[in-house]
Image (tube, rainbow, N blue to C red; front, top):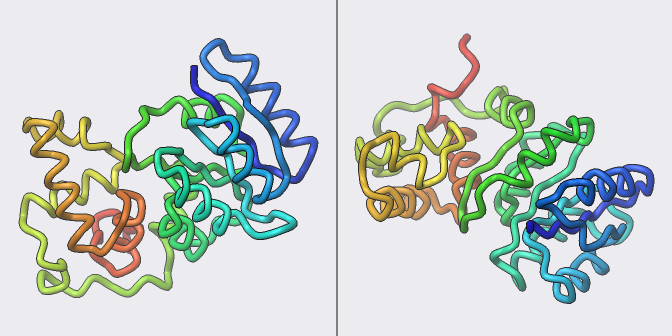
Length: 219
Protein backbone atom coordinates (compact mmCIF):
# COMPACT_ATOMS: atom_id res chain seq x y z
CA UNK A 1 0.00 0.00 0.00
CA UNK A 2 1.44 3.36 -1.09
CA UNK A 3 0.46 6.15 1.29
CA UNK A 4 -0.12 9.54 -0.34
CA UNK A 5 -0.51 13.02 1.15
CA UNK A 6 -2.12 15.70 -1.03
CA UNK A 7 -1.02 19.30 -0.46
CA UNK A 8 -3.34 21.49 -2.53
CA UNK A 9 -5.32 24.56 -1.51
CA UNK A 10 -7.91 24.26 -4.29
CA UNK A 11 -10.50 22.16 -2.48
CA UNK A 12 -12.16 20.77 -5.60
CA UNK A 13 -8.87 19.47 -6.99
CA UNK A 14 -7.71 18.17 -3.61
CA UNK A 15 -11.00 16.31 -3.15
CA UNK A 16 -10.85 14.82 -6.64
CA UNK A 17 -7.29 13.60 -6.06
CA UNK A 18 -8.25 12.12 -2.71
CA UNK A 19 -11.16 10.20 -4.26
CA UNK A 20 -9.06 8.98 -7.22
CA UNK A 21 -6.27 7.78 -4.94
CA UNK A 22 -8.55 6.02 -2.45
CA UNK A 23 -10.36 4.25 -5.29
CA UNK A 24 -7.16 2.30 -6.06
CA UNK A 25 -6.57 -0.99 -4.23
CA UNK A 26 -2.85 -0.29 -3.77
CA UNK A 27 -3.04 3.40 -2.82
CA UNK A 28 -4.30 5.23 0.26
CA UNK A 29 -4.70 8.98 0.74
CA UNK A 30 -3.61 9.77 4.30
CA UNK A 31 -4.80 13.36 4.12
CA UNK A 32 -5.42 16.44 2.00
CA UNK A 33 -4.22 19.78 3.37
CA UNK A 34 -3.86 23.28 1.98
CA UNK A 35 -0.75 24.66 3.71
CA UNK A 36 2.88 23.67 4.11
CA UNK A 37 2.62 23.93 7.89
CA UNK A 38 -0.14 21.32 7.94
CA UNK A 39 1.71 19.21 5.38
CA UNK A 40 4.85 19.01 7.50
CA UNK A 41 2.81 18.16 10.60
CA UNK A 42 0.78 15.47 8.82
CA UNK A 43 3.90 13.98 7.24
CA UNK A 44 5.24 13.39 10.74
CA UNK A 45 1.94 12.02 12.02
CA UNK A 46 0.93 9.75 9.13
CA UNK A 47 4.19 8.82 7.37
CA UNK A 48 3.22 9.12 3.69
CA UNK A 49 5.42 7.52 1.02
CA UNK A 50 4.55 10.21 -1.53
CA UNK A 51 3.55 13.86 -1.19
CA UNK A 52 1.74 15.60 -4.05
CA UNK A 53 2.81 19.20 -3.52
CA UNK A 54 1.17 22.24 -5.09
CA UNK A 55 3.49 25.17 -5.80
CA UNK A 56 1.23 28.11 -4.97
CA UNK A 57 0.07 27.77 -1.37
CA UNK A 58 -1.23 30.40 1.08
CA UNK A 59 1.56 30.23 3.68
CA UNK A 60 4.83 29.43 1.90
CA UNK A 61 5.30 27.98 -1.57
CA UNK A 62 5.66 24.34 -2.48
CA UNK A 63 9.38 24.62 -3.10
CA UNK A 64 9.97 25.64 0.50
CA UNK A 65 7.45 22.99 1.52
CA UNK A 66 9.45 20.38 -0.38
CA UNK A 67 12.65 21.52 1.32
CA UNK A 68 11.09 21.28 4.80
CA UNK A 69 9.60 17.83 4.23
CA UNK A 70 12.80 16.42 2.72
CA UNK A 71 14.87 17.88 5.57
CA UNK A 72 12.89 15.97 8.19
CA UNK A 73 11.74 13.00 6.08
CA UNK A 74 14.35 12.38 3.37
CA UNK A 75 12.79 9.11 2.18
CA UNK A 76 9.49 10.72 1.25
CA UNK A 77 9.07 11.32 -2.49
CA UNK A 78 7.70 14.78 -3.27
CA UNK A 79 5.98 15.24 -6.62
CA UNK A 80 5.31 18.82 -7.64
CA UNK A 81 1.84 19.71 -8.94
CA UNK A 82 2.04 22.81 -11.10
CA UNK A 83 0.38 24.71 -13.90
CA UNK A 84 3.57 26.72 -14.43
CA UNK A 85 5.95 24.95 -16.83
CA UNK A 86 8.89 27.18 -15.89
CA UNK A 87 12.44 25.80 -16.15
CA UNK A 88 13.48 28.07 -13.26
CA UNK A 89 10.75 26.54 -11.11
CA UNK A 90 11.88 23.02 -12.04
CA UNK A 91 15.48 23.83 -11.18
CA UNK A 92 14.53 25.30 -7.80
CA UNK A 93 12.24 22.39 -6.96
CA UNK A 94 14.86 19.84 -7.98
CA UNK A 95 17.41 21.56 -5.74
CA UNK A 96 14.88 21.41 -2.89
CA UNK A 97 14.60 17.64 -3.32
CA UNK A 98 11.57 17.11 -5.54
CA UNK A 99 11.46 13.74 -7.30
CA UNK A 100 9.35 14.83 -10.26
CA UNK A 101 6.68 17.07 -11.70
CA UNK A 102 3.05 16.68 -12.72
CA UNK A 103 0.95 19.19 -14.62
CA UNK A 104 -2.26 20.06 -12.81
CA UNK A 105 -4.20 19.12 -15.91
CA UNK A 106 -2.59 15.67 -16.09
CA UNK A 107 -5.08 12.84 -16.47
CA UNK A 108 -5.68 10.86 -13.29
CA UNK A 109 -4.20 7.63 -14.77
CA UNK A 110 -0.95 9.52 -15.46
CA UNK A 111 -0.85 10.89 -11.91
CA UNK A 112 -1.48 7.43 -10.47
CA UNK A 113 1.22 5.93 -12.71
CA UNK A 114 3.84 8.36 -11.41
CA UNK A 115 2.75 7.79 -7.79
CA UNK A 116 3.23 4.06 -8.34
CA UNK A 117 6.70 4.42 -9.88
CA UNK A 118 9.37 2.40 -8.02
CA UNK A 119 10.53 4.01 -4.81
CA UNK A 120 14.23 4.80 -4.47
CA UNK A 121 16.43 7.39 -2.85
CA UNK A 122 17.29 9.28 -6.02
CA UNK A 123 14.90 7.98 -8.65
CA UNK A 124 14.26 10.40 -11.49
CA UNK A 125 10.58 10.70 -12.37
CA UNK A 126 9.37 13.52 -14.51
CA UNK A 127 6.10 13.89 -16.37
CA UNK A 128 6.78 14.24 -20.09
CA UNK A 129 5.57 17.74 -20.87
CA UNK A 130 7.32 19.60 -18.01
CA UNK A 131 10.54 17.73 -18.84
CA UNK A 132 10.15 18.76 -22.48
CA UNK A 133 9.65 22.38 -21.39
CA UNK A 134 12.76 22.20 -19.26
CA UNK A 135 14.92 20.68 -21.99
CA UNK A 136 13.72 23.19 -24.56
CA UNK A 137 14.50 26.18 -22.33
CA UNK A 138 15.94 28.79 -24.74
CA UNK A 139 17.73 30.58 -21.90
CA UNK A 140 20.06 27.64 -21.26
CA UNK A 141 23.59 28.36 -22.51
CA UNK A 142 24.84 26.42 -25.55
CA UNK A 143 27.00 23.34 -25.22
CA UNK A 144 30.65 24.36 -24.87
CA UNK A 145 32.52 21.22 -25.99
CA UNK A 146 34.30 18.38 -24.19
CA UNK A 147 35.98 20.74 -21.75
CA UNK A 148 32.55 21.55 -20.31
CA UNK A 149 31.76 18.02 -19.22
CA UNK A 150 32.63 18.63 -15.53
CA UNK A 151 35.34 15.96 -15.53
CA UNK A 152 32.89 13.17 -16.35
CA UNK A 153 34.31 9.99 -17.86
CA UNK A 154 32.92 8.53 -21.08
CA UNK A 155 30.93 5.96 -19.08
CA UNK A 156 29.60 8.67 -16.74
CA UNK A 157 28.46 10.69 -19.76
CA UNK A 158 26.60 7.62 -20.95
CA UNK A 159 25.01 7.25 -17.52
CA UNK A 160 24.10 10.96 -17.48
CA UNK A 161 22.27 10.59 -20.78
CA UNK A 162 20.36 7.59 -19.42
CA UNK A 163 19.47 9.63 -16.35
CA UNK A 164 18.15 12.23 -18.76
CA UNK A 165 15.87 9.57 -20.23
CA UNK A 166 14.36 9.09 -16.77
CA UNK A 167 16.05 5.79 -15.90
CA UNK A 168 16.79 4.85 -12.29
CA UNK A 169 19.99 2.96 -11.31
CA UNK A 170 18.37 -0.46 -11.74
CA UNK A 171 17.21 0.39 -15.28
CA UNK A 172 20.61 1.92 -16.06
CA UNK A 173 22.29 -1.30 -14.91
CA UNK A 174 20.06 -3.28 -17.25
CA UNK A 175 20.72 -0.97 -20.20
CA UNK A 176 24.49 -1.03 -19.71
CA UNK A 177 24.62 -4.71 -18.67
CA UNK A 178 26.47 -3.94 -15.42
CA UNK A 179 25.70 -4.72 -11.78
CA UNK A 180 23.31 -2.53 -9.81
CA UNK A 181 26.20 -1.66 -7.48
CA UNK A 182 28.26 -0.42 -10.45
CA UNK A 183 25.36 1.60 -11.85
CA UNK A 184 24.74 3.22 -8.47
CA UNK A 185 28.42 4.11 -8.26
CA UNK A 186 28.33 5.82 -11.65
CA UNK A 187 25.16 7.73 -10.74
CA UNK A 188 26.73 8.85 -7.45
CA UNK A 189 29.86 10.06 -9.26
CA UNK A 190 27.81 12.00 -11.82
CA UNK A 191 25.81 13.70 -9.07
CA UNK A 192 28.96 14.54 -7.11
CA UNK A 193 30.73 16.05 -10.12
CA UNK A 194 27.69 18.15 -11.01
CA UNK A 195 27.14 19.24 -7.40
CA UNK A 196 23.66 17.70 -7.41
CA UNK A 197 21.79 16.00 -4.58
CA UNK A 198 19.46 13.90 -6.75
CA UNK A 199 19.24 12.46 -10.24
CA UNK A 200 16.63 15.04 -11.12
CA UNK A 201 18.83 17.92 -10.01
CA UNK A 202 21.77 16.45 -11.95
CA UNK A 203 19.73 16.39 -15.16
CA UNK A 204 18.48 19.94 -14.54
CA UNK A 205 22.03 21.19 -13.95
CA UNK A 206 23.43 19.32 -16.95
CA UNK A 207 20.68 20.52 -19.26
CA UNK A 208 20.73 24.16 -18.23
CA UNK A 209 24.52 24.33 -18.57
CA UNK A 210 24.51 22.67 -21.97
CA UNK A 211 25.94 19.33 -20.86
CA UNK A 212 23.12 17.33 -22.41
CA UNK A 213 22.93 18.67 -25.96
CA UNK A 214 21.46 15.39 -27.17
CA UNK A 215 18.34 16.08 -25.09
CA UNK A 216 17.85 19.59 -26.39
CA UNK A 217 15.28 20.38 -29.09
CA UNK A 218 16.96 20.21 -32.55
CA UNK A 219 17.60 23.55 -34.19
